[in-house]
Amino acid sequence: MSLKEYRKKRNFSKTQEPGESKQKRKSAKLVYVIQKHDASHLHFDLRLEEEGVLKSWAIPKSPPQEEGIRRLAVQTEDHPLGYADFEGIIPEGQYGAGKVATWDKGDYLPLEVTSFKRIIEINGKKLSGKFCLIKLKAKEPQDKNWLFFKLKKKD
Ligand code: MN
Image (tube, rainbow, N blue to C red; front, side):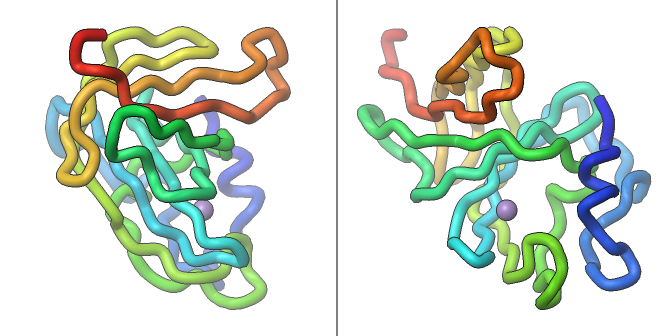
């Protein structure tokens, strides 16, 4: 996993977003967080700890709290672990300018992980239960579009 793209997009003398090595792991549990990001378009950033970084997806609409709601989730660059605690304003003119606030936070359990699919159990306050993230075009590595939805209890 590399944070090269994360680094490249940001000027750390101008944004208060965390650099790479600020955060050490706090527990054995894997971090789950969704941040509400009031950028040029309001969206929600889903982040899941995986192999020392936060895998990230931008969800243009409100995250799926109930079964039957499918949301587009566009994969974005990996973020450093410390980003899970970031809240604040990214200054005008900087990448992602706008307000970032925690929308939901907790931990998660990976149940099935492949390059194009994640079945996870989320333990958050707003999202809780089994969820699926699945790539729309499994055979196109460049394609960033995934679907994110809650699974039925019996699945
Ligand atoms: Mn964002």
